[in-house]
Length: 220
Image 1 (cartoon, rainbow, N blue to C red):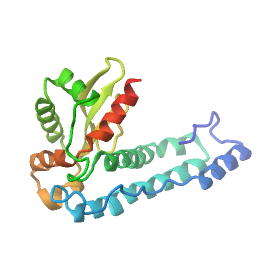
Image 2 (tube, rainbow, N blue to C red; image 1 turned 180 degrees about the vertical axis):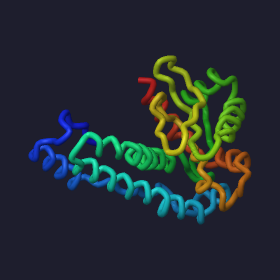
Image 3 (cartoon, rainbow, N blue to C red; image 1 turned 90 degrees about the horizontal axis):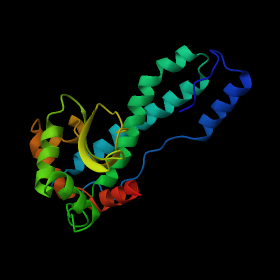
Image 4 (cartoon, helix red, strand yellow; image 1 turned 120 degrees about the vertical axis):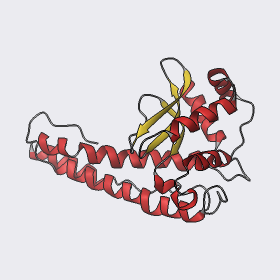
């Protein structure tokens, strides 16, 4: 995102520079690190295909369009008007890019939490892995409408905490370790309106190896 200009109308050279930068850089849809059917039976191929190709692609398209409009805007007022589109689509792109890496096939790394820094931290901060999952599921299922459930690392307390964000808001207060999409497009075709069933099933395909790497990096 480009910085808001001091003047309501930026000099022509500055506007041209911003437009040129936007033209050079475009956000793109990241490839999945596994096949669309690799998470079955826990997440269906149909959901993964639509979620990735349609929903995430929409956020990418929206973010590129919003950034182009921001770069070509001629006033602070116009830039302010674009903030919600940048936040929504930018958050959608950030969150989903993280989400795909958060998952792994159950016959691979999915669902396997071995002894190590992540398990030790979860047991320290929640009492047990089962207690953590129970708290995470209850907190995430209670989201009214669309949003995300997170296991986040609090850099101030240096502890893991379960937090939520609304809509496509990215997690800023914590370092995201595990994020679960609770928008209906992530589960409705398979689990209908029974969010607890989706949340119970997803632990079978959570990539704890990836989550542990994030925790180790955040703890440095």
